Image (cartoon, rainbow, N blue to C red):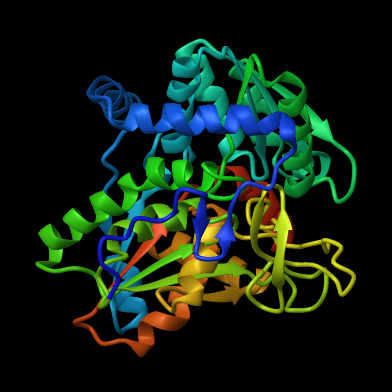
Length: 400
């Protein structure tokens, strides 16, 4: 059992993972951000402002909804959905965007940059900037802009400048690279709202902590609804923010299993998936030491997922640590399984999930029938699938 879990350490490491692998230009602002973050979370006024925005503007708490029809259909465990899809902007991302936007104001910085893959973090950041009167620039891969055109339009309507990234694979990794380059050049006036639990310390900690509300709520809601803690938590894992948000409040509960689900794409073959724990290796990417997908020469491999939000080449360092100590386990599902799960939860529960969230649903579709009816699974339904409808229709050869 883990007792009084207090990671990361003062150097920003979760075991051997994490750290600050950065150009010298960013060392001072990173240290400033760390200092201001610790001051903010100890400041009752900051916490009260954040809580008010999360409740009245974002829509917290989100419900813990029993998937009654799907539970009956599958047999086995009782399945509950933590409905982050019902938040303002349609995904969990707003928790972190609002929190970091408040930090930016505390830092005295009026310009915000961010990266986005599926577009949900970009939309959340643009929304937070509009609400808090901050300038906003979003970097997004050209490939992702095409498959997430709806979210690009939303960001622009919210007043953000969306800058296409055309180099490399033109997806999330390249968007992060461009955002980091911008930050190096403009750090005096700019705060980078990194969107997942990855990158250099303190970002994995900050993003996790702003999303920790998910697990805190789910814990209390599950006790109220079932009289006890859940048996299993399941969440999709790209960088890993929604999963860490759910998992963190349960880390010291060894009887609660924690399962992360990665993107298996077309199968575990080079450049056909984004499952870092399936054949990945230890390395350093974009400021952090963690598990990543690279070839034998150490070059970062191309990735693939039907989900624009899960095709990142590395995983957040805290996930790598939780895997190492056997506190969490990580599996993968394929694109075909994701599409099947998307259709099934829509048909059974009247919910269109984000393709990211559908990875967790696809894994539970296999897991739940192996468990008993007196056991409980919580899925973090991290976002809604409005943004993915056109892509799903095309993949399934359906006619609108």
